[in-house]
Amino acid sequence: MSEIILELNNLHKKYKDVVALESLSFQVKKGQIFGLLGPNGSGKTTTLAILLGALNATSGTFSWYGNGQKDENRKRIGALLETPNFYPYMNPVDNLTVVAKIKGMEQYDDRIEIVLKRVDLWDRRNSKFRTFSLGMKQRLAIASAMLSDPEVLVLDEPTNGLDPQGIAEIRNLIIGIAKEGKTIIIASHILDEIEKICTHAAILRKGKLLEIGELSEIMTQEQLFRIKADNLQALQSALSSLSGVKVIKTTETDFTVSLGDLKPADLNRSLAEKGVYLSALTEHRKNLETTFLEIIEA
Amino acid sequence: MKQLLSIEYSKLRKLNSIKVLLIVYMAIIPLWMYFMGFFFDNNKIPFLPDSTTLWSFPKVWSFTTYCASWFNVLLGVTVVIITCNEITFKTMRQNVIDGLTKRQVIVSKFLVILCISAFVTVYTGLVALVFGAINSGLSGMFENMGSVLIYFLQTLGYFSFAFLFSVLVRRPALSIIFFIVSFLVETIIGAFLPHVVYLFFPLNVFSKLTPMPFFRELIEQAEKQSRQTFWMMPEWLNIVLAFVYILIFFTIAYTILKKRDL
Image 1: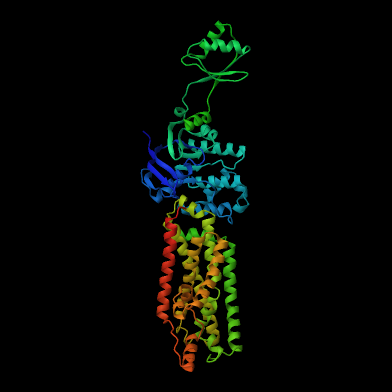
Image 2: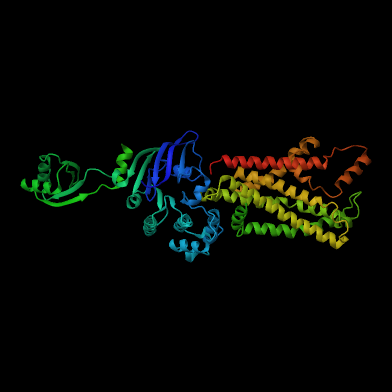
């Protein structure tokens, strides 16, 4: 049983007349890359803001490192929440110096150089933050989160405002950090991002937890196959006579089917016995987006 | 506390607007003193002693702080800038996320304000010391030196007011305008109220901490001449009231910030 890094117990947050979070409870364990999913306004940022001391929960508790809600805990967390917040009139080195002092770091010059190089901003170390593009600001925020080499990274929409290349870089950066054994909590509505990175996920809607578990668990579902044949009508009638096979989706060129207990080879053989020869049989993995939409809409 | 000051120093080191405002303040005070001295000399106010006494110990202390007090609004603006910046840049929120407590974030701002007050007080005191020493030597320099401490209290008063405004309004430009307009508003309201009531208004209390030199003597003379008595607030009460207002302003600002979601 690995160490519990974060525990939420019945967290509630109410704004004037909106319930933003409703009895949210879950745990994050050491080494997990934990994705927090949900549509806009589902409470992802609210949750993280509470966990990071920027918002007060209406009720409920949380605990970092089994150490309660102490402010001290945040010094051991690297966080990026919503927008990159820095002093616009200062360059990245000076901005990170402020962060380093808050974190209580003593030697930080080398570390600042390391993280700035890692996010490719070292060449811009003398430019003021206000001259940065959105992508550069976002990268500086990630550098800032990594500055104190914390055990836990909390990243809220870390690829916001980045171009495809930047997104890929950040993703690799996160995977790299995760390999060092760090725990990462990442909120995003870009599911592709979560799917490529996370080990675990929680799905939120309107402040409620809908699903939680290992990503592979959440995505467990019937295996789907996409099949094609030269004669689609013959294929259709052959399929309807096979028990256990269900046609999920029909397009003008192919069918998406679930096989029940059958193996793909069985399907192929049965169809061949009926004189229908498949011209294509490919495994069709439902992506997280489809699963997510199913869960959200359920 | 040392850590908090070091953090604040890192933030302010590169803030040019503050440097400019402080330099303007430092340059303008001696100039303004020359102007006021010139003004007193050329508009012979009755009962006003020879203006050279203004430049000598012990009066030079209160003359300097009186002249300096004209530019406290300028310094109030620095406080507004420092405070509103943290709110609009959302760096106050970020500081908390990075690991400070909300309390530490607010206390840091108090500390900065105290430091600015201390800095300008020491500077103003030095100006008085230099002018006093040039014009009258060092004899009698300790007499009336308390004016400088009272000046410290005055800057703190204006700053606490500026701080409260920044916390309430949050936007720098708007806060600066409101801050300056509030002086006018208080004066206008004061004009419609009995003078005695107006004496208890916060900005007036702060401003009366550094009265015009010989102000009391002037009033006394006027009382003799017109055979009327004017109620003047005793200095000790003025100081106590200033303390109370400062405490109230800082407490309100603290409570608002502490309760508000960042």
